[in-house]
Length: 380
Ligand SMILES: *Cc1c(COP(=O)(O)O)cnc(C)c1O
Image (cartoon, rainbow, N blue to C red):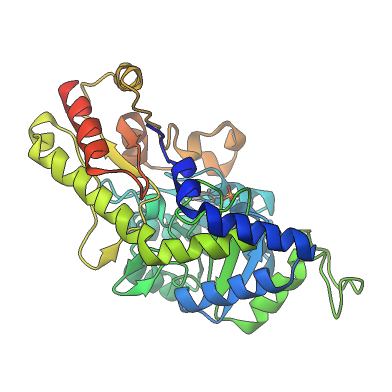
């Protein structure tokens, strides 16, 4: 069994993907052009925002947002402690200080109460200027944007939604990647909507920021690529990736998002029926009003379980599992000795020891899920 079966997906979409790639090669428009424009417009429509700007990857998408906002030295940016490194990395890369905030034990997303505490603490210290919050839609589930937006408004903070894992999710019928003042996503192959290499996108309703981001992404271009009015980067989505995404986005909308939700629901159903609760295993939780795009199906194991041994036993039965994430952000060596290494995040420290992500994609069958859950529960 594959952890995320991209080979199976290709077999299903092969004809359309091969055609898209072939016609792109024949036209030899490898940078920009119709596939990129059409994709940006389709993604903006779907998400429900005015502008979509594609770029080279999800990390650049976050960096471009930070550049547009002029985030830099002296600024504090609040980031969940439980996330992929890039969410905090880009803050430090711009010279600002990521302040890591604990997450909710049930949703894995940034805890609004802890966010308020962290903001007032930084204000009290008086050394850094609170500038923005990066809320991550971890494992596909939108963060608690009702509360987070209010906190940002009350504290005059910009909200950046890191929807790298969240594309396709929603909250009260509003789609992920529309909650931030700027929102971003990633098309890394294993993300909910992945391409065949690296890719990313930025979303915003703000015309001025959209213009700035389009400029920063192409060497700070002014009226043309050869008129450079600021220092930027080279961060574009390849046309070939846009063409592939055109095909994959259709499948995503038509059935993949629904199917991956069915697979996730089956996991929860079989785990619960198999006595998960009695065994101390916690399936992921999706609260009322939320819809996940299920980048990962991540459980918490009972504290008595030897996770590594369990992983090896499952692996021996052909079941791959992953640990997302092994370490709290504030404990990453890159932040040693900095203000970012100071954080009060007991929930993150605890769940890092017990999380386990199970094989998941829209092409898994009920039999696959039965096999994984039975093998797992037998070991507990
Ligand atoms: C994958 C990921 C990113 C970075 O995306 P890339 O396309 O790999 O650069 C950023 N944030 C989160 C939460 C991610 O999962």
